[in-house]
Length: 299
Ligand code: SAM
Image (cartoon, rainbow, N blue to C red):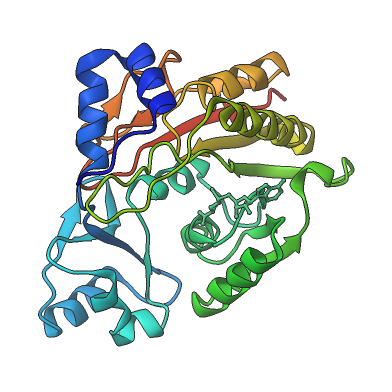
């Protein structure tokens, strides 16, 4: 029998998005999401990776908004994991939605970057690659086991410009200052609910959502203090609940940050957001449900 959406989530989705959109979201939860990957341009390029996929008989498709992303419509992750391109760190398995925040970070060579909630490191490694390995990235992670995984991934992705800080980001010293901060916040994961056959049921109660929002605001509060004047902050979650998204961005605006409008390519399925210039990706066969906002600290 098919898994069901937790009652609280269903009610909240209906309330915020209405019947038609909530049905579309549920449809997205029921899709077997296609495998997608990102080419690690620190050590490889698209041509090399595509050649190896062709050689292994693995079909691939391009992504219109990102040259380094590939969709493997007929493969499983294990098929990629068995290839030399994977063991050599030439690719990183990553959902397309999760590739958006590093693109909006627009990291420049020589800049100081804080990745506040970094493990397992998908976005840290992407920012490292986008800067050509020339940014100075501090990758903060509170959980010891996840920090180990982060170190492992940085090494296997040949990232030499990132340092792991095993710490609760909320207790980072206010003395630090960064040009750019990514707050890819811990969240309920309401955008990534899996309602395919045999998937394990997920919890989603109001009290838990509120606890997440409290953590997200505390991390945002710290991010605002650590951001240089003129600096850029990208806030993202894999949740589609406005309490974890627009409400947290609104909190940052009240602390003096300004919203920088971002837009996703028209091929990205989107949900309406109450804050124009932010992006809420609708779960689908290719995309996890996701939220991204870009903020700026006035000079
Ligand atoms: N950015 C990661 C990536 O792209 O691979 C995914 C990050 S995941 C959404 C959130 C991470 O934040 C988890 O690894 C979690 O352990 C960590 N975390 C939760 N609370 C934290 C805190 N207070 N300080 C630092 N890290 C925290």
